[in-house]
Length: 118
Image (cartoon, rainbow, N blue to C red):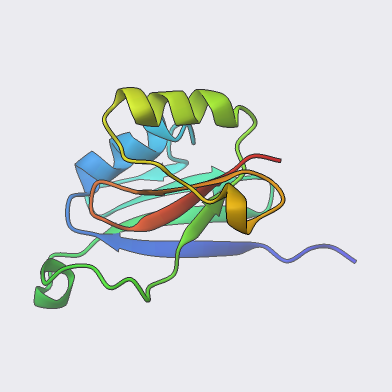
C-alpha cells in the first residue's frame, strides 16, 4: 500500500521572516513553491509544510496555544538545536515526558513546534 501524501498549512503574518526561519534555522531547505503569498517546503518524500500569508484580523490578534504544533525529526537535530540557541530562540526540554529527547520551541510568530531527537 502506498502511503498517502499529506501537508500542513500554517498561516503566518510575516511570510518573509517565517520563510527564512524554516529554511535557514530549521534547515528545511529552499521552498519547492515560493511566492508573495505562500512558501511550500517538502518534508520527507510524501509531505509538505505550506506557510501561507494571512493578514486578517484573526491572524493579527495573537496566538492560541490550542493550535496544531509541528513535530520535526531532522537528520541533524543537534545542529538545528545549536542554530536555534545561537539565534536566541528559547528551547524548553521535554525529555522528562518522552523516552527520546524532545525540545519545544516557537517560530517567529509564536507557533509551537517540537524538535525530536531519535
